[in-house]
Length: 412
Image (cartoon, rainbow, N blue to C red; front, side):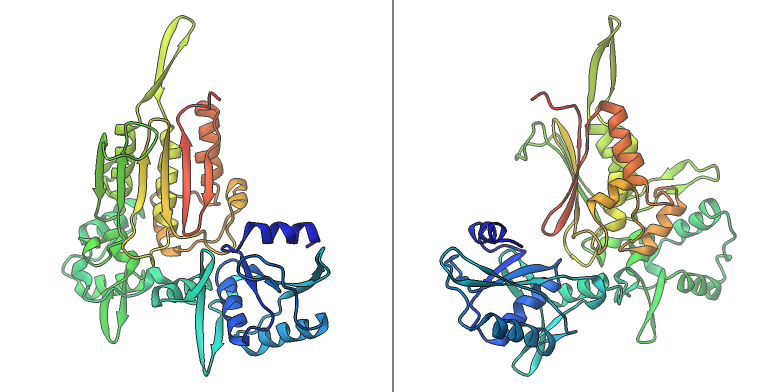
């Protein structure tokens, strides 16, 4: 980092990636900010800058400041880390310490010492706060120490799963045999082996993935299991809507022996909602009026499937949002991208990591997900280019991921 970049950071103020701190703060305060950045996607602490952006400078020598920062990073963090240290002189002759925190999923959650306890912190906007139990669940999941999708759902069991739908999956999707309906032990063992059932304190429960995929009534125990779909008449959210629907139930459809859908799940019903409300575009070709759907169905389906397969299900009470406007479709999935996944990698089709492996594998069995992570590149980006020459927007925001498909090229 050079002086120009430093001054730009200070001018922009504190945010989710930048924190101002005096270098005479308590070591626990510095460790708190370090923990919060490490548990997000990294960040920079500027030592010698007041909360209002005033350049007060280091109160100790550069060498002492560096030793102090490294000592805090080793002794007041679990696991210990080694930040990148730098020192930059300002125009006023003072020195600013630059502490850059780099992160990877393996160390999460990072805990900071607070008196005699170890506390997990997260970054929310321009502040750092103590993590909730749900926040810690997400961090353990990011480190792949816990698979949330195979956690047991209390007060559920095999009766919470739609055995007809599971048998349909086995016979008509996987093309394999299923136990007879009277073979309770065989069914139980099969569902345990496939992680659709799991054990908790000696009791058999449905897993999160089991309920999401094949649940009789997933939302009874998982409020986040569903899609909120709304069609607006114009280009902004408003009270008046063209159509709206809260889509609940199992994610997957039942299919016939030949593969046609006979009972639609949430994914197919969501795609139907978009098709029903997306409208069409018309143009003249050789004196004849041509018309086609405003968006390619392949791109719509891929956006919906990705949201369902990769969303962060630890964020309870938050639906996937599907919003249709006069000029675009937006699909919003709760949670940031899994660690190691970037928008650039998605565009190139080199993504191999998934947050919800079991969901991904079963949706792949249904043909909803491509085998080599090329769905975004092929089914969204290339489909949109062929359909109307537009580029989709793939945007990672603070706590959600947005896919935006445009109905027509910009006329600006």
